Image 1 (cartoon, rainbow, N blue to C red):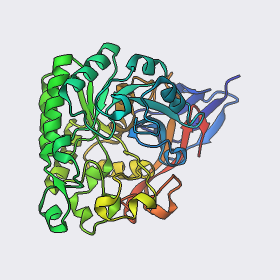
Image 2: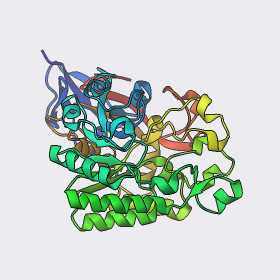
Image 3: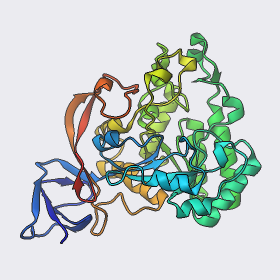
Image 4: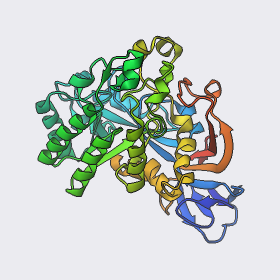
Length: 402
């Protein structure tokens, strides 16, 4: 017999009334509480679809549960690379039953940018999209084949938009800041150049293309133009590039060593406006937990990446408080749009949808403390930042994981 749960006294994101769960699905919204149902009193908290985090680099269950994340799209940059069906299948099973893992198939074998993998077989093994990983496929002929093959299977290609020729060896954006600090740098235009080429190839192949992280005004302008022409294009961003500019690297703080690197303040503001006007479709954590052995090094020697799962919701709620988006729109960016891109049934509070939920108090103040992170590492550039909005409970398939 399926367990019945009634969630009462909740502010439902995108709905009203009592939320009734039956087994691992939402059975009803509103109406009477059925006799025998277990009652969960939300005590006025918000209840929303569990976050679908698109493009994380590690299966970090504890961090995801703490952050209200119920599904992750796992980047192919693993050891070994997700370029074979067996490896993809193992990745998909890595966190059951506590977390849905949706692997992204490597666009090329070993992510070397040359030979294509067997997308059809990897799709059968559980791959939900194709990705170029942390890098860009420099060979236009190879990228044309990637898009063509993926389009024939109905798979979206997720790419890292940064021209490898310009950005090779760079650890910062070319600017007065990088010059003063003596850091190797690349012009911000490396992003727009990569986007321009891939947009042309996507139009040529009729492929669905997602730019995982777009961080510059020029890049976003290209995305807007492509969408206006009706191309199947989408793009995302993480809170690091929404709320930090290159000023954050002034003290050589390696927790702000990211890929792509932090940009100028004008670009950061352009990213906020792109969230406001709908150009940006997805907000993800880009969760990349890194230990001290690769972060406590000189800035140029440190690995890029930040732990973001535990702070994703709290930081993103700042967009609601600042009037950039509504809370309903925020969960389209965090849950519904990533679900649609991956082709998974999630990201919505509707009858029949999976009972993957996050309970949160939007007004709870707290201070980010990297030392108290429950995940694999605390390499956050937001350490000691005061924020508002805290996850209270995470449910997957009707099960309380908190």
